[in-house]
Each structure stands twice: as C-alpha cells, then as structure tokens.
Amino acid sequence: MNSVDASAFIKNSVVRITATYKSDTFNNEDITVTLNGNGGMIEGKESHICNYVGGANSGTSMSLLPYTPVRDGYTFNGWNTKKDGSGKNLKYIYWRSWDNNEESN
Image 1: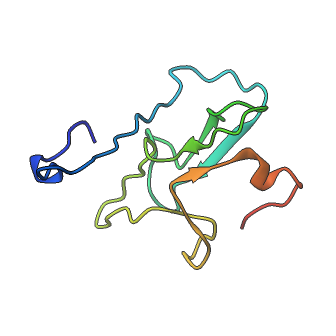
Image 2: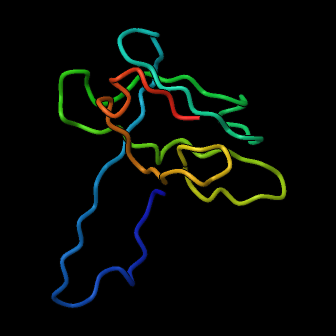
C-alpha cells in the first residue's frame, strides 16, 4: 500500500501510520525467514527466503506486510502459522517466537 484514503482522516482524529520495509539485498547471514506461498508465488518463487529485518538483539518485530503471494483465482488473506490456515494469523514476527528451535508447520 502506498497511499492512505482520505476517509481515514476524520476531523479531530489521530491516525498513526507506520512505515514497513524489506531489505533490498539478501546475504543469508544471521537470522533468515522462509515464507511459503502455499500454492502462490512470492516475487516469482514458491517460497521466499529473506533476512530477518528487525535485528537479532533488538525488540523490533519484522513486518510480513511487504511480502504478498499471488495465486490465480485466489485473494491473499494473510500469513498464518499453519498451512491450512488454522494457526495464528501474523502481520509481524519476532525472532524470539522461534528461538526455542520450535518449527511452525
């Protein structure tokens, strides 16, 4: 999303807008995240490996919002920890959530 609809701004309202980034380069160092398109394509691939953008020693979460898979005949409904959609919906991830060597299926 590159714009905010004017209807978001109501007189005397407060709107908080957060910038979301993804790295321009992939160096396969430190912590990486593999996103599975589950039948869709992410930047031309079925799965997308990217650097964790948040910092290994920081309390900053990484946004998944810039990574949207495309699949003909489907609308992307969001990222989920389970392939069948029965897990937790995610917009952001924090590296400590998988620090215990636990994998999400």
